[in-house]
Image (cartoon, rainbow, N blue to C red; front, side):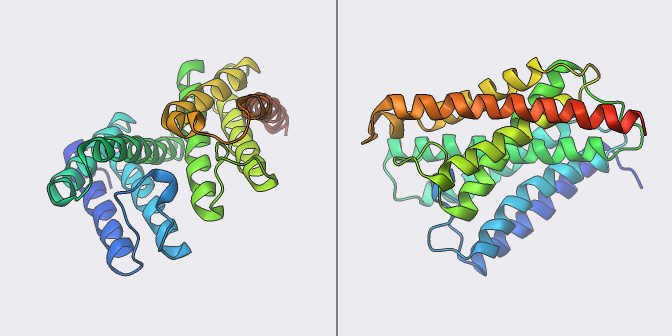
Length: 252
């Protein structure tokens, strides 16, 4: 059953908001914190439910629409962010600078996850004919960064944290490989450079959001630079795997 885009967007908003409220009220997740600090004081299930609520809302907005367009997920994400802002910001005890910083980081997280849901909604469409190289890179970048957020929330270790450890690197490598893989697997033209572009895009997102943390890092910056180069290489490896899998799939 397909609906008018307005109806599908409203459906996505309702489902997302209900799951969000469950995560807050039942599992104690604090929705208005830095994206990488949401897990504090909350259960693993609550954090996972919070992530799923955004992605599922975007998926519903796109998949159940008459014309499956990713921008419907974007509209749903903006709508949800507007609702959260109206309900939470006026009652916040944070100073203006901290509040704007949290709103910016949280807004990017929410929008990326809802758009990722929209991408999934379009991909499971029986009429899906793969993406242009640009859209494939965007899809890989959004999914890759969403994996960064999800794995960070589940492990408590971010790829751009103050200390570079095994878990941090694993979180980054897996996320970049997934992004690079999808950037080629979903593209009409299977080009390895899609993985490079995707890796650089994910890295840019991480740097923008974590710039303040990097400037106050206790470790030499060059350590992070070397690690980030490794992440981009991981995205290229993922792109190569995506090309191999797609080639073998076509020859089955």
